[in-house]
Image (cartoon, rainbow, N blue to C red; front, side, top):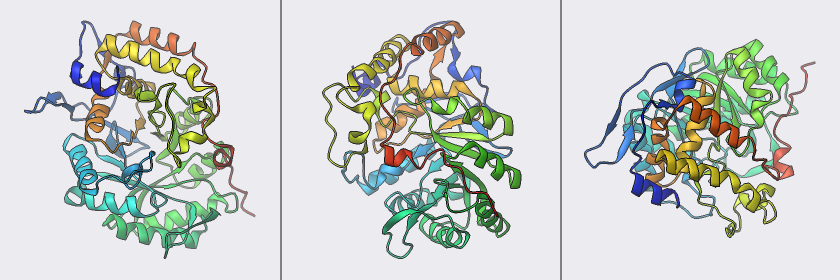
Length: 382
């Protein structure tokens, strides 16, 4: 039974009595009732959550990274990508995630066009930090978070996104050559100019978070986090809780693995990053599919898809965690936002976690040369 089969047969209905939403363990700031469209497609007007002290967003966002090129290396239909973005907004999504590196540049252009009719009603988050030629879009070696470069990058972002400000700007990866104090100083200048409203860090070291937050409050940390990769639970999520920082989960569906769309016979296309991740190697993949079996079992029980169970589990962890599943399929976007309506009893949630904790994921989440850019500490300012 795959995602689409479950989606068609179950209709995203919720069954059972004396049931609580996963989200009840981590109350959000407000609630808007569940409703169904006239076309009988289930959908939610999503509840709201806060990132940091003041930035309010939908409990589930939309990642648009693959809207210029999918993991399978295909080029999606641009009109359909715009339709997905606009339909997501109609269904209650207010957080949209992109980066200059996606494309490069092209995904920011797609998002800018997509959100133009309702720009003032949503939150745009994008990211800087890779060494990209601002004229040609050519990827150059390494990272670049020099203050003067950040300011040039932001000007390009504003044009591509068709806006006068960026709601949440992340440093995509910590630059080991630039003190975080200099990075935050540049961001503060941009905040004073009204071009940036909030900022965050992606995949940073813990001490860099503390140093940055001491200068200017961080709204959110964006790290990979899902049932497939629970690394942030060790240090990053406790630190966010200590400092009052929000957490945005990228790849909350384990680059598609937690949707049930990958099996032991899956072969990845040339250029698909998953082909280089050892957690998906022929040696490790059959073992790691135990977690998909768990999701499918609970999905049948709760009349929900594996993806919905995965996202509901994330929402339950903390009231300030916001997953941003990405997709290029309308049905999958609607499926993902339906995760908020998955309901479990407290006993069911405990039992689910008990079963989940018995599964050890084999293999690394990223190739070593990519992983080297995560958990980096910025140099001390001299």
